[in-house]
Length: 267
Picture 1 (cartoon, rainbow, N blue to C red):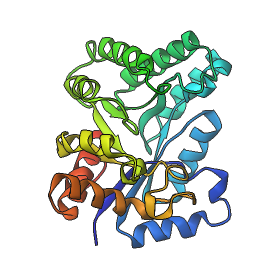
Picture 2 (cartoon, one colour):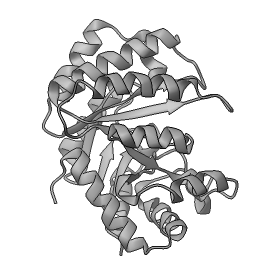
Picture 3 (spheres, helix red, strand yellow):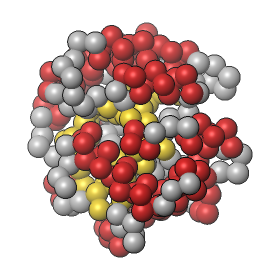
């Protein structure tokens, strides 16, 4: 059995309300030894902490998704700072820019991203970054990386963060790697039409990759269209192993160690 870490899950999602405990048990039985539940708003962040307090295999992040940036107040940001100090919180995010759905004004998205970066720097926590562009465009990636480069330049040397569900090009990937970021690999890498994404990931160093389910979203090909869950992470590890011509055990071990290093998880 592979020993895996799912670095991006949303087990607080209502889709898991009927069987959340069984989902976490199936993950453990499938070799997923740790799950990082990612906050994507104030309510979600609080729920993530509650899950991490209840389940020993779950850790939390707290953050405000760019979709919610338009409704964020100074009170919310101060509450986020307090939540981030919780001992089971291992990162800030997911934060970033989403120019695909544009649910919040772009300048507001940037302001809320910058505010969360300030909290991460203050508390010395790595970040989880969401970036999504419209098809054929690069503005969200370019503007996010510009903001992140300025943030990294004032940090002490150490843990930086992960670009969640990476879908940029090789130049963008190299810029992110140069800044110290890890890149998240998710279920879409298993899709038949994802040849360009597979070719990109195959060129990346495995010691800078993290495996993610983003459940309940982005189910891998074998269960596409159904609810995703952490137990399915092994199919992503197997796909990465095939592309890189190494064993799935190697991919699992290296990416799990990457997660421990980035998020400060126990061995």
